[in-house]
Length: 247
Ligand SMILES: CC(C)(COP(=O)(O)OP(=O)(O)OC[C@H]1O[C@@H](n2cnc3c(N)ncnc32)[C@H](O)[C@@H]1OP(=O)(O)O)[C@@H](O)C(=O)NCCC(=O)NCCS
Image 1 (tube, rainbow, N blue to C red):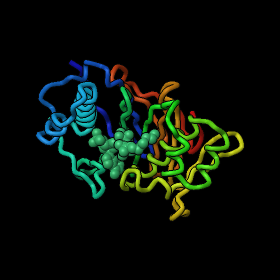
Image 2 (image 1 turned 120 degrees about the vertical axis):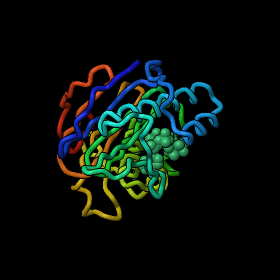
Image 3 (image 1 turned 90 degrees about the vertical axis):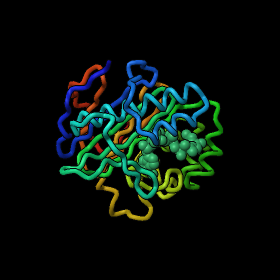
């Protein structure tokens, strides 16, 4: 049975990034899910997807419970207007955002600030140019067409989704509100087309989880420090402190 020692609330300006594999059977923890989660679980017909959903909910509850020091089964989630789940307001308030793709699970945890995270598996044969034309700005589509580089599409996608999720907007609906810009050395930055003044008030981390998964996290507040956490090693490891750039 997996256990996590009690976690201190992340310090001001610090983000915890929990990363784990949904293929890990240690996450099969009985008795944690709510009735709503069991209904969702039962509605998933594909066995692997169903198992990964179950493990996602177990991991989410286990990790968040270690911060709020409550039994994992007793946590309640309150959906925002567009479905972004939050914990009931406490003092200080623990904020989180979850993303999963294939076997990868990522959970970002912070005190107080808006946060969004996204991970996507790179599928080499996907028609990403068509997806870019559908969801991205005309300039971004042109950039993707011109460099014929599928990882650029995914890097842009996760950055935009992290921006959308940080603000609790409707998933997919806000993708063209945020514009990715590429510097000469290949780094991506993101700009809010509606609220330029807001752009400098966010910290971003982008990274490759392995060669098949791209991830990005965005948190309100400049110069955040991101700390990696895993279930097997809950020691805190500062990874970097940066606003920009692919790690
Ligand atoms: C809508 C869609 C983009 C969601 O993507 P996803 O990768 O499943 O989403 P993530 O795993 O990053 O995030 C989901 C989690 O974010 C949280 N969330 C839900 N609504 C949210 C919102 N409005 N804001 C922030 N977070 C939200 C929830 O915790 C949710 O977890 P749950 O689904 O287990 O309850 C996807 O399902 C979809 O429709 N894709 C089609 C488009 C496409 O082709 N995409 C592939 C291009 S790479």
